[in-house]
Length: 225
Image (cartoon, rainbow, N blue to C red):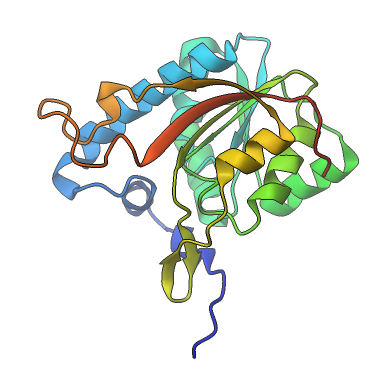
């Protein structure tokens, strides 16, 4: 039997076009359209959940190339610190967001911030990322440790886990919603915006709405890094 290893190298992409295809795994013919409307619709949810202002500093956990950071900074003027395991995504993010109100740090740097409690983000969001991380409980505790007390956390996530391994994506059975509710206080669930459907003019495909959830949590510091 082959051993299974956590293999996040799939997220190392050298070009913006390749990164977009990995970030949004949709048919190529709708990628550009879906990128624009999904980014806008997701940003709307984040704005409703976190209520950021120009004085806010948000944590973007799993920032990728910064598609949401760019949108949120343009719309609110807030500051955003992105965290991503992929060095190439972080590099592309700095170029894509192109703002002095954005910075990107590695997973190791984020772990040190959490251990030292040297950050106090006013809010955080994680968009279809926690389903991919190796140890979601640890990452959620780190988010709690780096956010201010009572700070909101917005999560958009797949119901099933999609962990990258040497044998492809795997579902290890961990329940991100349950883990988040053990570390944060659950506050609200959001409906799926129509613009997050692959083909909004045709209605949802079978299982499309049921495969994801959108939840707002509040940091009560029940977890520690």
